[in-house]
Length: 243
Image 1 (tube, helix red, strand yellow):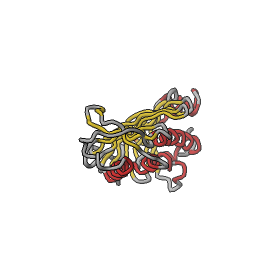
Image 2 (cartoon, helix red, strand yellow; image 1 turned 45 degrees about the vertical axis):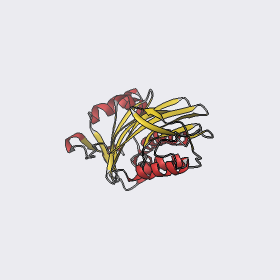
Image 3 (spheres, one colour; image 1 turned 180 degrees about the horizontal axis):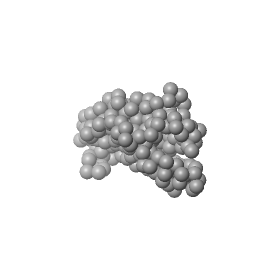
Image 4 (cartoon, helix red, strand yellow; image 1 turned 120 degrees about the vertical axis):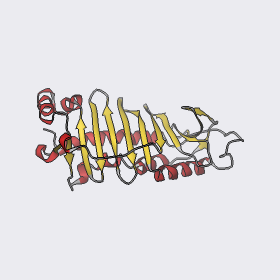
């Protein structure tokens, strides 16, 4: 049986991974091409513009992986600003956690590997049989056990980590995933924030390596994203399992 404490720990681990990605992503080095539309704007100003654009985007998707302390995590989330998010987060060797968040209501669906990782083989097998592929729903007013998971759905959470203590410099304009981008670099933190080389820059990727930790997360704004609750037939009240 999954307890709130067990789930809270798993969410905290995932959020820690996202924190690493934010820390890695803070800034980076060099000069920009004199012909690009951002040539007259300082690196820190470009970063501020890109961050503001991310915050105001109606939808944002995040896909990537980070490594912290020798453990790898994956993130695949689509956010509808002001509504919620859906997707999955995972930890290497311990499985993936499907999730849907609408306001303060959270639905989670650990895969079989995660159930057994959390509960052990015997209890995990029992939980898998009981839940039978459904989501666990929680509308608990006690948000402490869910806060880390819910915060993943708010780009502001990651943005605040990106800009914290960052001092950006411009790299050389290049091409990334078919787009012309300007790298913003921060040698002190060992990270790069790539933004589109446009008058209104958008963050396209965060990447970097620092003290043995590393990561890369791709961002896409404006994709078709509609977050809805799982059908009732595919849900089970988490209160029945102490969640």
